[in-house]
Image (cartoon, rainbow, N blue to C red; front, side, top):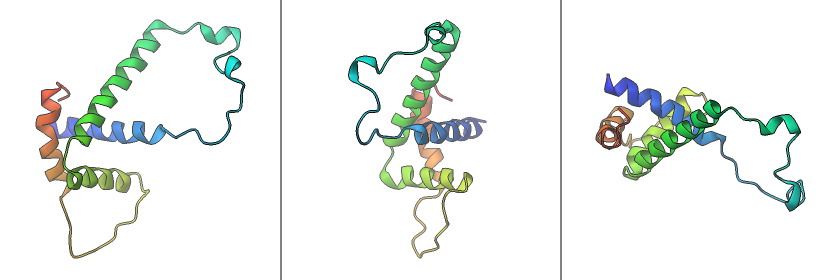
Length: 117
């Protein structure tokens, strides 16, 4: 059961981590009007805002757990997530490295410490 929960969290984490893109080049607006929005957009639902903040905190915690693993383990997780999204080709080589299941098993205690699973 915990493995399935961790797997679902890792899929959400991968999608969340792929959303961030660095801002390159010149900004499209002057500094004094970057935060300006139309009148109706200032009224945000408190529930929606708290849900967004909770999801962000949850994904940052998963990100911390994945980044605290040794590089081979976090690489295995990243490769598996890319394979599931169809964004990676599978290359065969003599060295298989760490399996995804082994990486998730190493990740479970870290997630349990942070009450994620």
